[in-house]
Image 1: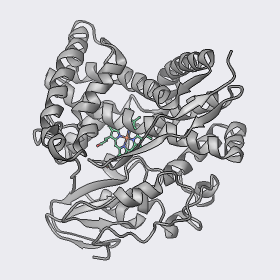
Image 2: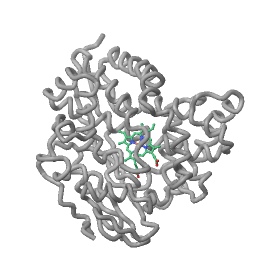
Image 3: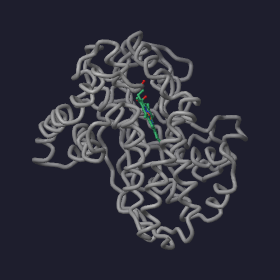
Image 4: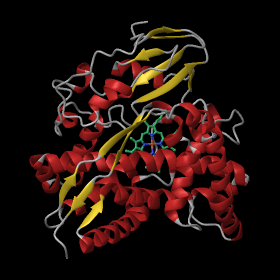
Length: 398
Ligand code: HEM
């Protein structure tokens, strides 16, 4: 098949507007014994092919064959469709506008008021807090303090520990289980108990209506915590970083209407995808016009970052930010950043809405500036993502 067998990909360029490309060039490597796919059309063909199964995060605590215990991420076929249908109501444009945005505005205002009062803040802390609040409310994890709860989810998913070598790597699975249990006992159980008493409009109440147990509910909470919070948190910081460094882009963002602002954000995300690599395994032999024959059992590493730079699809100067690109090419601008096919990200519009609201309000604060660019870290397990920490921002004090 015409895919790249080694770590090399034809689309990486040294002349790029991307902040994370240099680090990605070091760290984004296909998994061992997988076929590496970089071309946009080939990625899309794989993600839309019904014989493909999710193959990421081999050691994830939420990976189960039992459809009642599996996270939505690992489900397929009818079980996956049912789970998607159960959560879709939380992510419609109407739900975002009427249900989520008022809360996002309140949280944003209170976080930015604290920033203005102090004159300085860590942007990554602001984005962590906002995205955690949004996800916790959708899931219904509202009985315990927010930040320790999110820390437990992240540690249970193993992200910070797994890429350390030696003992850290050996102990990582035990650490993950320890945090998973702590998360279950301290956060999930009280939330479930409260909703057994009085149902609310959140994911936990929906899962209880389906007769799911506390442990099953924990699995889904962890998926949403990681998929919805970790991704958006980093995206907010990287998008802000671009606009702090590029005054013309920032001005364009502030002058734009909602679709114009969203187009700028998606164009930044194209160069800075949060999931650099996603994975699939073929459960049957398949012959696709875009990709050729894929044998049963073949494992594939799908290079999202490379696909987003595929000039044959995204047009000339693919490594440059061009907010008019998607409109010119009659594309919605999501490219491959939110995946494709059955597992396409359900939260994509929500992520864009919360990022847009926070950055629009942030950039209007008098004297706002980035006084320390973020440190960049890489978290190879699963999605191969960047993490941006210690981004110090300042403004005129109130
Ligand atoms: C900038 C932010 C985000 C990015 C870049 C992103 C990216 C992605 C990608 C690439 C996938 C597909 C993975 C695959 O096919 O293997 C995905 C799936 C998913 N995302 Fe997002 N996501 C973001 C925000 C969110 C938010 C805010 C939520 C929810 C609150 C969310 C919930 C999910 C869920 C539940 C899945 C699994 C869907 C399924 O398997 O059917 N994501 N996301």
